[in-house]
Image (cartoon, rainbow, N blue to C red; front, side):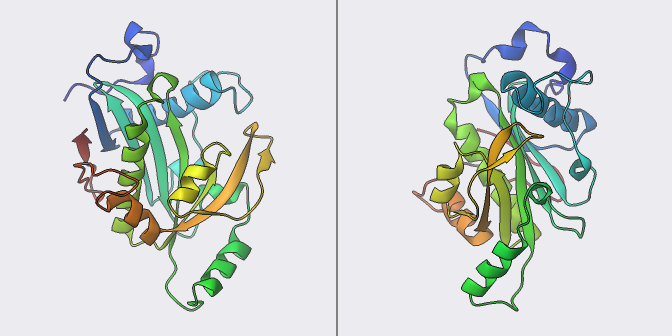
Length: 235
């Protein structure tokens, strides 16, 4: 495998050019360079392309927070040949909270959901998805989003998580509803981000049904990552 493309290559001509064959590899970050690529992707998409988080490029050209340094975190990336084009972060609750809870209190909705599922005393282990980014030239490659979703679901299942919380954009909320997530509040304006978010919650069981069922909403992808270590697969 070629050396991972890093933020230092941002000024090269290949940084915005789609490869002719669009060979996409999905992997979980295992090296410092790959983790840095995830931070750079957030900065490139959220700040440079979309003008969020104040819209002013940061000197280090990376966007990170405390949840990147906790246990129970995985960075799932998509590479087009050697350059990073998309990523999502998944976290497991380890006693320090989850990223979506920074902007919304999910506890009342979680209690209501568990009562509705008629298992108030049953097992509950939450995880989250956040920092979903796809660079603009690759957004029409919709299979990238589907592959990230499948890899994230595989991770949730590996952890034994029961539920997933997230803050969606209004644009992606219908997609999450389609795969079983439930909005639990009207869109909220988050000044720090500079955008609205829709707090949502879903069951890992439903995620798996859509991610891996034959003929389902998410197509079959030959992807078998090992989340104890890092895994990768070419699409």
